[in-house]
Length: 72
Image (cartoon, rainbow, N blue to C red; front, side, top):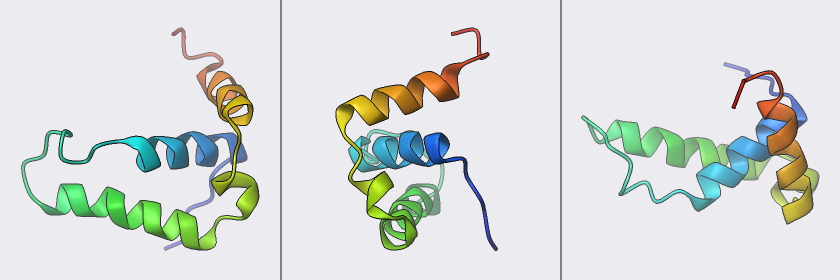
């Protein structure tokens, strides 16, 4: 399966996955914890350093872009 993400979505998702405590995320079955961990590993492996090495300013800009039109 191939999933294409907008750059800003990829930055926000990578940043969240890299910082979230998966032990604190409610789950009903262990694979629900493993799947996000696998996704993070895959993003680290396939994403360019432009995403994995994003600065705090780039992350904030990506969050703003993704949030546009959400009404948050």
